[in-house]
Length: 118
Image (tube, rainbow, N blue to C red; front, side):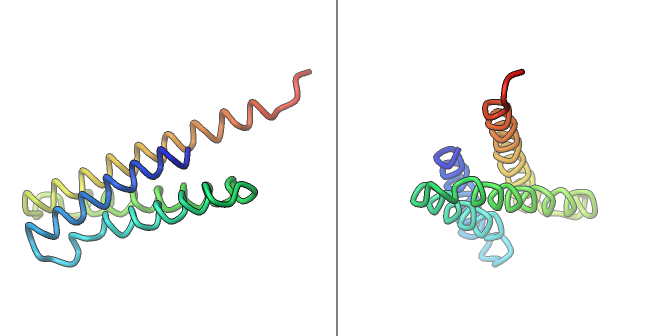
């Protein structure tokens, strides 16, 4: 799961940097900040095998926050957003939500694999 998280982190960083290059607004970098946090956590989990479980759970919280922020913004003021802001928020929601869903699925599979059979 850390390698998959790194891929989604790179996509979020690219989304944020691309949006910033088009708008020069610092708030356009929000997806990049979430991507950087995910990249750091995924890299640390690859480097430190014993703490991988904990680091990936923290990464899941970051992904959850990365999905909730644009969802709230879209719910509150989607009609007033510029097309670029709307696209960035939808992209961040989709990327963060997808990586979160993949993480949850991975956590469930790991729990089932570790459960003793009766």
